[in-house]
Every structure is written in C-alpha cells, then in structure tokens.
Image (cartoon, rainbow over all chains, first blue to last red; front, side):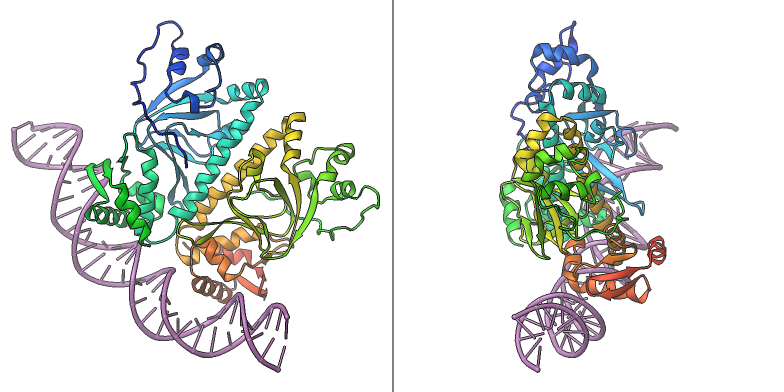
Length: 247
Length: 247
DNA sequence: CGAAAACTTGATTAGCATCAAACCAGGTGG
DNA sequence: CCACCTGGTTTGATGCTAATCAAGTTTTCG
C-alpha cells in the first residue's frame, strides 16, 4: 500500500496561475504530476492536452459519478478522500474502498463501460477530470500508457482484496483497528488522520453505526486515538500496532 | 456476471489430437477458444504460439501458484473451478473469489509483479499456461490485446466488488443463499452445482464451518438444495430466488 | 476393514444488532 | 444573543445470531 507521502503541503488551487495558458501551468505545477497519468509528458505535451482537462472541486457528500452512468471520464485525485460505494441487491449501501491523492478512479470509462460504483466525496476533494476520448487518443500515440493503466487496475484489485482480507473479518474492534491503520495512509500531516462519520465506518466494515461509535470510544480510552474535532483525530501509532498485536 | 454457458460438454483433454502439431489442434479445437485470450488468431497464428502454451491438469487442493511467487505466466481456465485466496495479517485464510471456465487468472504476471494471491484448484482443473514473455510479445504486435487484458482486469475488479457487497454481509443464511446463487454460475450441466467443502464455504463467507454446515442443512430442509453426493447438488432455482426475496 | 477426514448436530456463551434515550455542535431565525 | 432545531454521536438495556466447545456420524481412502 505505497501511497506517496505528501511531503509538500498542497498549495491552494489556482495559485501561481499565469493569465495566458492557465491549465498548462496548473498541470506543470501540480504537486502530484509525477504520480499521475501523464506525468511523463513535457510542457509541450501538456500544452496539447491541457484544454481538455477540467479541475473540479467537490464538497463532502457530492457525487462525482454514479454507478451505471455512462463512463465518459476518469478522475485523478489531487487532494481529499472519496469513497467508492455500491448498493447490494437487497438495497444496503456498502463502501468498497477509498481513493486519495494520486489515485485514479473511474477506469471503467477507458473501456467504454458504465461506472461500476458510485464515487462520493468524503472530505472536500480536488480532482482532474480526464475525458475518455483523450485517453483513447493517447493510448494510440503512446502505447506505454496502456501498461500504466494496467498497473492502476492491479492496484485497485489489490486494494479490493485487502479490504476483504483485513477489513471484512474479525471482531468489531479488530476491524476498527485495521480501519484506523488504513486511514493513516490518507493522513496528510503525519499522525493526524481524517475520521469518517460513524455511518461511513459502519458501511466500510459492515457494522452498525452504534457499534462503530463504541469502538471509537474504546480506542479513545485506550489512548490510541485523540479526537481533535469530529472529523479529525491524532493517532498514536505505537499503541495502535500494540493493540493489533494482541489478537 | 456473464460467463458463457457451457452448451457443449467438455471433451476429454487430448481427444482428436493429430500426431504432428498437437498443440495447434488442441487450441483450434478448444471449446473456449472464442472466449480466450488469443481467440481472434487463425490457425497460422496459433501455429506460431502453440509451442509455448502448456496445458496442465490440477487435482483438488493443488496449487497453481502462490502469493509472492514471481509471476511468470497467466492461466486460462478450460474446465473446473479454482479459488483465489490470501492470508490475512493475522494469519487467517480467506477466499477472495473463484475462477471458472474462460476466466484468466494471474494477470499480475503481465506486469512483471509477483502474484497477489494463491490460486488453488477446488475441483479437478484444466488450464492453459501462457508465459509472460508471450504476452509481452503479442502486445507489441497486436496492441488490441492490451484492451482485452484491461477488460479482464475490470472483470476481476467487478467480481471482487460483488463479493464485498453480496457475500460479505448479512446473516449467515443470506450469505449462503447468495453463495449458492453464485455457484450456479459455475455449474456445468444446468441446475447441478458444485458444492465446496464446508471449510471452503466458511472461508468464502467468513463463517465457521459449523455455521456453514447448519445453513446447508437448512437449505436441504427447505428444498432449495438436493445433495447428490458430497461435492455436488441439484439446485431448485425457483425456491432459491423465493428465499432470497424474503429478506 | 480400520483410521482419518469431513460433516452434522446439540448446548452454551460471547458479541453485535436493535431499540431507546440523552447529548452535543452547528445553523437558523426571532 | 439566545432559543430552537437538526443531524450526528454517545451510552445503556435487551435479545438474537453465530462462535465455541463437544459428541457423534458418515465418507473417504489406504
């Protein structure tokens, strides 16, 4: 689960934007460019594509796209966390996985398929929207990109498998400990982590929100978690790992 | 979840094999050729590649490859069912998904990565082993193949997501009903399904084998399942769907 | 035929869901 | 500024489901 740590604080979105070819500069300056899809392109290459890339901002709860929608674009996450979720046949919603900085979501679009899940912002989220046709064009010119896309798919699959083995089994406490460990991967400043709502935790771990709440309370008592505000907590990693060992 | 139904009974493996270029014929005659990776090739194309493709048979419990092994080949399943499984950090084994006829497993190998899970035969299994280098070569000559591979990845991802939403939640009975529905996709002659061991069922649904056994007993009482022998049962689909509605 | 493995069934217990009530923070309007 | 309301949260009491422990049975295989 190697997500690059964000050593440089994210700069506010349009900062340093030149008046003439704004998107090129935004792309050149983008703090995640080297991890992103067209990271290998030089300024000339960017110049060619930047008109088609939209940068968007979503507030918590807003939907990037919904399952079954025609897949017209993929999205690179520049900041924030979003959740991929799906309704079961019986109508219950389940969160399948999370996506954070440098992740690429909506890959189905590349294949001309409909989206397989809803993508919903958990925090404020900044993304780049890359239209499907652009990907198509680029794959033709630069077959190397196909390999990069395959790696993205494999990463998503690894993630899904990890959720099944680590987050969808064991006691409520165990699941919650693993979840907090997972969340630490998405923490921007170190050991200060984003806390999902209890509803969200429940939908990730298949627990009721009451059980999620109790588990959080217990972790606070154990000194694993120090809640800063309702969406943010300081994590004592040593104690977390200690607690995980005891199982 | 559209797996092509097996209208034609699988023929025994080496039947109709000519003495001179055996593998070419085996490939030409292969009942799943149109669904498989090189399905678009003509006889001349097959001639070129067939020397490198090995057809292998595995007995229940045998391991095709193990997680962390260097990925040197992908496998097309010609018959039988195999399970992809993984050990959790805590050491418990979990079955992530199944693979059956026409599925391609071990895609990680294409990327030069190690395998992400163990692949183990559940029933007797026939597979074609396709070396990584062959895929590489083919992608160069025929970039169309890359797209086909991406679709395979997406299919695996859809499968993983479906397991999370449908098989990893709800009561033991509900999970078991969904599992039987899933298994019906792998049934060769219609409504006669392969029954995993209770251990395997447990590892798929995160239940103990005792609970799995009780659930099977209940389904027999309800007339949903008529066990033929210990690895095989007749399924009453109407009653299964009825039972699923009641939830 | 005998031993091992897989399966079934029962009794008890632990853990989570459920139901219910109180609490808290943020936002609105008087 | 405060009273009020709303949505998320916490905590408690109770019941149900599945885990656990324990025989006993059937199947498989040498």
